[in-house]
Length: 167
Image (cartoon, rainbow, N blue to C red; front, top):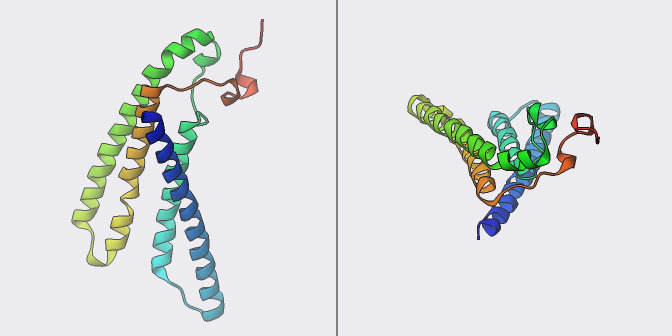
């Protein structure tokens, strides 16, 4: 059941990333045409485009994390035997879950402050800023599901230059 939920979540996030990218490109083209042909522009499209970048970023981060292709600073992992790496995967995923949950908490508090102190003409920007806590929640959920289900360690997820040479 968790695997099925995770697969639906991945499809949803991929859909968000695709729609956000298409919208961002469309809005950019509209802005370019409006400025060059009609000497005008739509300021609201700039605000939306800036936030669409965050939608793409967080969706991509969740997808990359799922496939174990994210940036890792694991110098010691290159020196460890495979059996020790397999034992440490779940604890590290739980630590990552806690860190993302902490970011989610603080992003939520940041958003509540933005909502509280935003001017009336800034409402769209404030509601689009919900992407910050939502994105960190998605990452928290992914790391938590991976810690429950497990993650396969693949040798292709580590660049060849960092892999331990065969003895």
